[in-house]
Structure formats: C-alpha cells, structure tokens
Amino acid sequence: MSVIKLHDKDFEPYITKNKIAKYVQYLANLVAEDLGEKETPIFIGILNGSFMFAADFVREYPYDCHITFVKLASYNGINSSGKIKHLVGLNEDLEGKTVIILEDIIDTGNTLEEIYKIFKDKKVKKLKIATLFFKPDVFRKSLPIDYIGRSIDDKFIVGYGLDYDGLGRNLADIYQLKEN
Ligand code: IMP
Ligand code: MG
Picture 1: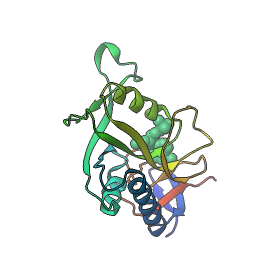
Picture 2: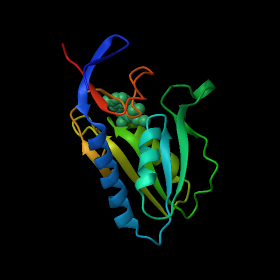
Picture 3: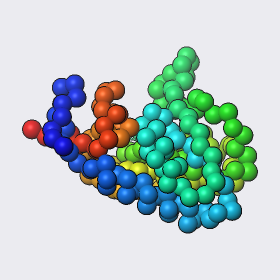
Picture 4: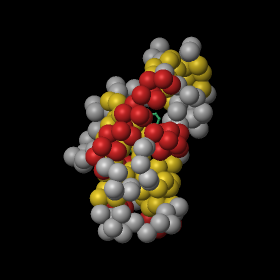
C-alpha cells in the first residue's frame, strides 16, 4: 500500500483490508449474539457507501437474515431545501420486523437523524443501527448507535465503498486524506 491520488488530493494507507474484515466479523457476531438464532432480521444497507460493507457483513452473519438496500435522496420540487430526505427503493413491508440499518460511516449524524425520522412511522418491531466507522469528535446528535465497528479520527477517508467525489469506492483498503 502506498499513497494514492484521487482527483486533486493525496490519500495515505490507513486501515488494511484484513483489519476491515475483522471489524466486519466483530459487528456481525455482535448483532448475532444480540438477536439470537430465532429472530430473523432484515438488514438495510444505505447506498452507495455501504454496498461493500453490507455484502461482507451478511456473509459473516451466521443465522437466517434478509438483506435489502435503500438510497436516501433529497426531494425535488417545492421541498428541495436539500434537507428533507426520502427513501428510494424500499419495497418490503417492515411492519413488525426487526430492522438493522447498515451504514458505512456516521459523521455529523445528519443522515442518521433522517433515518430515524423515516423509520419512525414504519411500525417496525425493533430498529437498530450498525455502522462500520464512527467519528465521535464530529457527532452532534443524541441518537443511539447500537453497533460500532471502529471509531476513527475526524479525517476524511476513502475506500471500501467510501468515495471522494465519486472515486475510491473500489479500493479494498481504507485510505486517509493526507495533510500537506
Ligand atoms: P453524516 O450525515 O455527516 O453523518 O455523514 C454521513 C455520510 O457522509 C456517510 O454515509 C458518507 O456517505 C459521508 N461521509 C462522512 N464522512 C466521510 C468520509 O470520511 N469519507 C467519505 N464519506 C464520508
Ligand atoms: Mg453513506
């Protein structure tokens, strides 16, 4: 692993794919222990960032489960403040279900807040949040995050699904923005 360039910025190696695999394994086991074998959860990956994490997570999950993906999009038209979000792609009826959200990273918590708002009226049995990465220094909400893979410094990262302006999602390792 060496320094890489995406668009105009340099990124240095930060977390190897082997380490990432450990965090994913840890999270899958944590959720499995919590829910047990009898409860069959529906995992919901938040696109685009969580596609790789979700794919690896469910392969580590030892019991029966469902997996689906949604995208958070801003409303167009009269509500296009860019702040009000809605879900794209949710076809499943979640009433009475155990729903576990799979997020790539939680930063300010704005996205998390939207997720809580959206899922509040879905009459789910249980709503839990699992995030691979968490930036505690920037998190501004008092909302629960149930499962955290790893807390990291407040520095921009790419790789393993995370992008810098569209690039870097395909990298197997995580890289951190280099400060010059
Ligand atoms: P939040 O709403 O501020 O918590 O940010 C959540 C979203 O911002 C994540 O789902 C990512 O898509 C993106 N994001 C936050 N921090 C990073 C980062 O360090 N690298 C890449 N994307 C990030
Ligand atoms: Mg995301």
